[in-house]
Length: 531
Image (tube, rainbow, N blue to C red; front, side):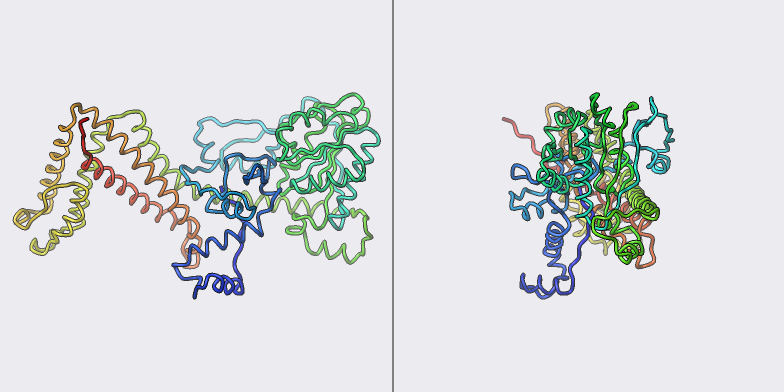
């Protein structure tokens, strides 16, 4: 898993690094590893935040899913980023894991012949369902009319004012016994609000990735009269909050969002915890002009305008332009994220075709298929490749480089070294045929060493499986490296996707050749020892 946040060294930073490590030029190829590790350290310290992107629990760095707010046990950031975060947090730095297999969710789901599903928030992703999965989105009306009141967003200049207003809104609802669910994006915000409510003497529960084991208990009581629950996106998915009679009389569950998420889907999920099955309820989002969404994608003109108006502290800003700016910002980010996913899928399609071939071969081996014919083809292909590489009919036989041929083929297939006498007056194709026959005969002799032919068949399967897995894992890493640098092709007026396809197929051919060569070499050199 990778977090796509980018940081780069400035000219001053480069000088600092060179001085610290006592190196002349950081850009030299031999310093690539130092460069890579420095960038990772900078990302870990400046772009990855504790209690937002990850939590530290039991001397371990655990990733928090930004969409669900849940801990993802066993998941680690790739490429050394996880190790950099472990070093930053002074916990035990564990070994970097090796990627054994990789697939995008889109390609994974597209492997199913039939696809269907149900979600309350499909409409916001309608285009993606249609473009990538070929699925239609149908809206089914609710069983009972929705009685929830969705209020306009409440906007303040600063985060400080916003959080004060949230606390006041909670106090007001709490006073009339109305249950409140406060939704936050980060663990940090949920803990800040918790401290603010504690100072006001309001009893409440906090649900975030740190207390996920208490989730069922907290959710079970969230709809009771006067209960206040602060939760990350964890409470925004799949949770049914039951109301008691007093809560219904008080206006049902009040949802307070402390920030707009970059995805409207997540906001809708939070809203959807209230007003279920015709229950009363209300929802309202509290935002500030300092929120990431507004700061990054809201109009700067908008910010400047409100600042010039001289809005008093703690004064609520109401303006149609704000609501539309927020909506636009979310649509912009969703469109951007969709573009990224679609682009990723186009690149993964190349990998997908290769996966299909490799896993089909792998499945045959696992199912116990007889690989004898495949092995014989590998042997003859290896001989053909060596002859084609070293010899040509256009060149006089005296000039054929026999030493090169012997050094290419004999370490793999231990035939007798080729001499001038043997090749004299022999055409390339004839020589090819003779060598193939010799190689096959040699393998048949190897087969005769085994008491039962099936023993060799099993050995073939074991070796082939091991070699395929090893070469495929290395290929995945190589493809990842290719993918990272392929964008530079655009500077040479070349289409990166086309170049990626071409280079990927070349690399795949190289991998297949390496699988054949290694498998054949191991089988020819296997020894049978009698105990």
